[in-house]
Length: 262
Figure 1 (tube, rainbow, N blue to C red):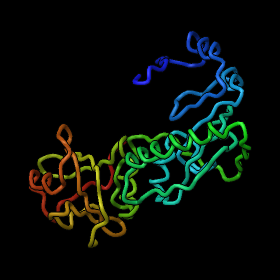
Figure 2: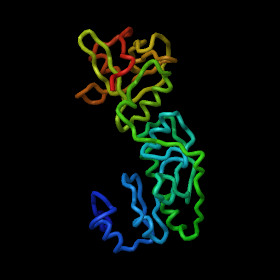
Figure 3: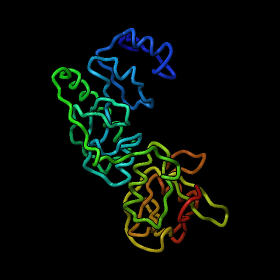
Figure 4: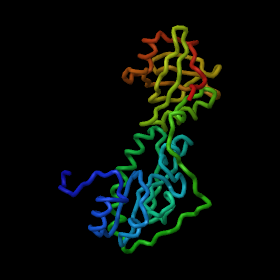
């Protein structure tokens, strides 16, 4: 909008006025990023240099809608960024450019997605400049893995799991659907959204609160302990976990449910 470029917001690029306008423009290349529609054959075949997509993974690994989130969930550190040509199969097209990308374990998926965007712009620009001379390489189908969309159930914290795994769940669920757990209480269970955690100290029965201090709320897990550092009660703003604990009068010995019904 600032550059005065022609913009259209449409329900589908594959039909109607949107398809007519794209066809009229006769583009040399079409680029999509985080685009939730499959392009029909008429669009795929329209540009001289094809349709390109920027994908934040080291394809053929993590094809699909949630590549960064699924990688974080699995504790991946060494990943990559890819520019490829679109084909009719999801994220399966030939690769034009690929660079390594480290998924900083101190960052959550929301921060990493923002980082991918900052890196992806210049990467796409360089590909477009070099496009007439680039040679694409085919993906190895045998190495393909998939990253389906997240569901709310993916964010449920089951404290029977290892603390490191739960820490990655919290990182992966940002910005949606957020990790969640339930604090059990005689006055009624309270659901907490968990925004940030760190690995804690101590051990005990899974779900039991080991400590409440300046660091947050430390909960025993199936292996190790997890410290909740920033949480959010339903209908309330995000706060430091120690402040939420003070409001709830939570002390060591309290208990979180081991899982939340989906």
